[in-house]
View 1 (cartoon, rainbow, N blue to C red):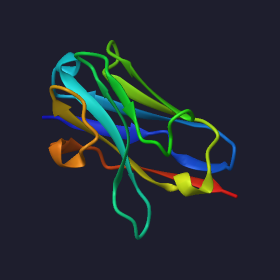
View 2 (view 1 turned 135 degrees about the horizontal axis):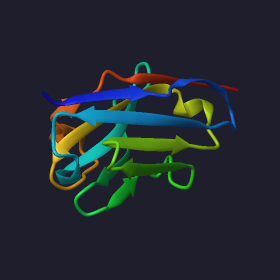
View 3 (view 1 turned 30 degrees about the vertical axis):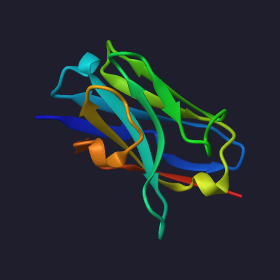
View 4 (view 1 turned 30 degrees about the horizontal axis):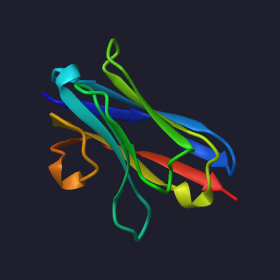
Length: 123
């Protein structure tokens, strides 16, 4: 059974940092892509970043480029999202998701999802 568990969310002041973790199980980690998405209240879900474990390609949305860093620890089957210089507009529930093959920022292509972790950035 494929499982993804997010952790690391919380409340932080603007300008602060958080590191989210997505711990996975139930599939061959090296063959899959992992993505982070977020959804703020009243807004559509948006892609944040993704990484392809098979080819190492990484993508970021323009809104987080230069502030967020995605990384993958294949030994721990875990993907991290380091979030620096956080802004109030980063407040959202953050989800990780996985799909076989290459990474993409299209949430419609991801089959398995975690339950989400809340990130709140105060001004």
